[in-house]
Length: 475
Image (cartoon, rainbow, N blue to C red; front, side, top):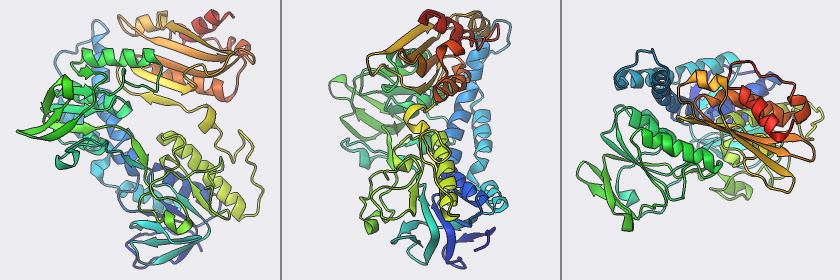
């Protein structure tokens, strides 16, 4: 089948086959499709919502558009002489957010697909047997070589009495709201919870963050969560740790949240940010002997395990491996290349760190929490074995002092002392995201610390903290 260039709606007029069928047209699916086309294959990309998916319209892009103005204003206020009186212009912030998500119109994404040689199919896809997919329970489409599942994840709803009886926000509503709420209660102290709590607080909402653990960002080192909680409180967010919502119920003007012995609170909106799970409930996994609702386990080539033959692949959140957009896109590129190679009869090399293996999922997953202060992390965050050593210092160098008055930050390197290579790094502070890729390169490349010492940081930049950390290690 030749490369398709038309967008179709529903099952009418569909081609009945393609070399590859990609289920899920978010950023991950788009990358898998584009890579397969680049490898000479025809592709049908099936999406039931907006092409571009969660990241483009309800997650990464709009959330950062909401956060950036507050971060910029706070940064300006830390440098004397910069005129920055007054609060944020909430309407301007929301309008800019709307522009970044193209007003929730995916025309641009469809035009990209057409230019890339990908045929877009509108509808909900389900697996219907080996290399077979139905769209809206209609036409059966056949993949000559592979089906790639990139359906992402959905919000988890906790088991809280009354939750189903009140309107709640998930991350979608939190990033797409058209007005600043008067008050917002946030359940969950993970990335979505802390980012949205700070974004809406800086836009003028009264915010309560309710966390059932003893700190926010529990998967990060303790110092990172502590600094972020301080930043949230400085913005007026009421952070309550070790608290669980016992029940919720409708209240005048919003929602009442029962906190047990901690009392209760009322809020105009309730954001549930208690995690996400792979979106596999209605995918037809049962037709293949797999369990609906469970992640699709894959090997490093993206091939789904537990299914006969080399035809079913998956990438992104749906696998549960490394649920971050950039890691999903990385895995999708691997899958596209693997499928193309196997279709052409070329050998697939799946050894670690080769072109056909998503090895970084196990060793070097970078992540940024775009709060103020930011948290940037890659690789291991805590020592796991004897011979692992953490080197930790405040970020207090000329570059940070010039960057902002009263700059506070913390950095940690995790070192394998036997091989003297970096296993991971965590930074917390204003604008530390820009330190992350150098750390990622050091981890992926297993750069010997004695060679890394010769990577001289420019003066005066925050990157000088690298020299201080290596000196503290003993170099």
